[in-house]
Image (cartoon, rainbow, N blue to C red; front, side, top):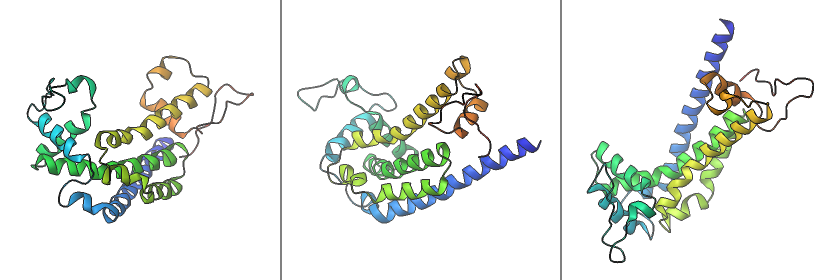
Length: 220
């Protein structure tokens, strides 16, 4: 029971930390980039992406195969990343916004979500939530976090960067289990308990020579 209560308290602490970080990151993002939500969409390439989003909206939730307004017609569904445009349309419909407004909301959220990914890696994998918060805020202060969207309008490119930190966390967790000597089915399809143990293990510490149990996971 004591161990279960300790695990529950650890989970609540992580959730509270994530909530506090989310509020601070969104507040700082709004101060730095509120113009992305006002007026027309920012970025030199955004009119092109707005047209793509409107084309996706015409067949939503499906995505049409033939886009007729580029080079006499191109099968964009086969050769262009349209998930970000589909997401913008979904946000617009769920919030009863125009497609242009939905595109701007997604554009605004890209950098905060990337910053939260940085926080999640440092707080969850390295177990340093305060350092994770600092790293997330420093990410937002970098001009490169905004210029590719706000100036150039690389919408699909930058929306994809939201997945970078989750992918890095997954690779790091997998590597930790590999160093721990796990080669069984739990390594390939980890249950929640294995994922929890993995999240608490140091990401780069090799297993002890005196034990095959691998990195320890005491504490949170």
